[in-house]
Image 1 (cartoon, helix red, strand yellow):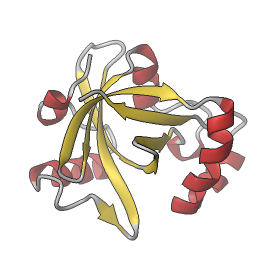
Image 2 (cartoon, one colour):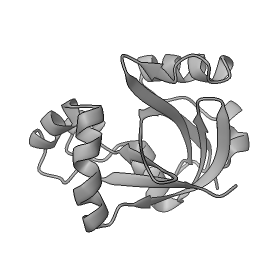
Image 3 (tube, helix red, strand yellow):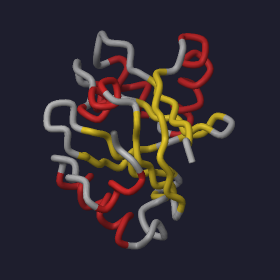
Length: 148
């Protein structure tokens, strides 16, 4: 079960540029890396579904009420990203948004929620629409709710 306390001890993404972005974000206390080119990012910690170890990555986000919205695009790959597979196995997550840290719970958006949230996320990051045409899978939309 991932919590906010895992943010500083989790293993970074396998993608070097994501790992570097995540470390910059965390070492600055969230003052650097939260926004780049008009896009806001958060750090997400999940529990590895096989290893049981905390894993972290930096992701683009939107909001819906008090929830944070993520898109599990993996650049339009035919398989879901590891972070999404991990939260499907254990929806407890640690999150840092700017300087705020919290323990949260992740859930897949319902079809009706996805229908409303997908266009919002495409406005935030237009490449999501391109990614959706590269794969036959429906790209999942995830909602994070603070448990603190």
